[in-house]
Image 1 (cartoon, one colour):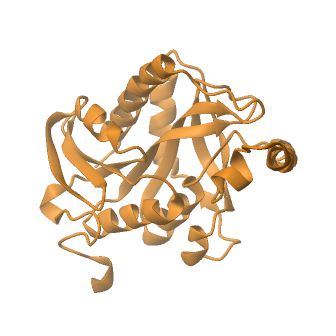
Image 2: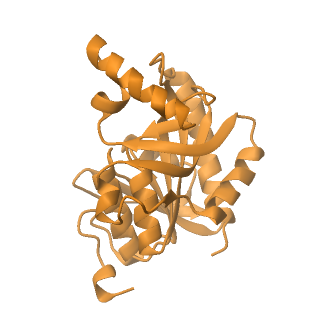
Length: 252
């Protein structure tokens, strides 16, 4: 790394090199930080800065840091970039995604890669640069997913900046326009859509880190049916376990 890519303290996250582990989980919802901490040994909650919550703990002998970024590619890549500057080289985004058949609500979706329809990834590499998940990380995730009972799918995500303009229509006219876009999405064989994956995959690969995304499919792209609270709570526990076990299984 160049001097500009290293740091003893993160500008926005507000944590130091000594506060983080050697792998990171990137989470959208800040409330999940307290819940994932229950799956770590000796969790240490770090001071919250700009609404960015972070915890570091141990899983099967490996120190893992989890940081919540809120939502959207710009802040997600800021968090990844700052943790990279503190020495982390493995990143896994976990959270939620919109499901495209054959993926269904309540199932897991794993990103092998992503369609770059976001703007943030353009600041890291030209549009022709592929957004590809790390092979070793996805191999560990596939193995752990195969040991569970929940259905899962692996494939290409579509990453978009506009939630209400590209992914989820509130009104009739907008919903009809988005429906046309979703036909193209289905034609391309995407399994889910979100607002972060393509930017994270591109940023990590350009920086020299490995990254992937594993989500619970929480909204049906066609019907806009949303997963229930109890079903999500159950899926979230499994999501935490799969993510942490896969990270712990990776070679240091």
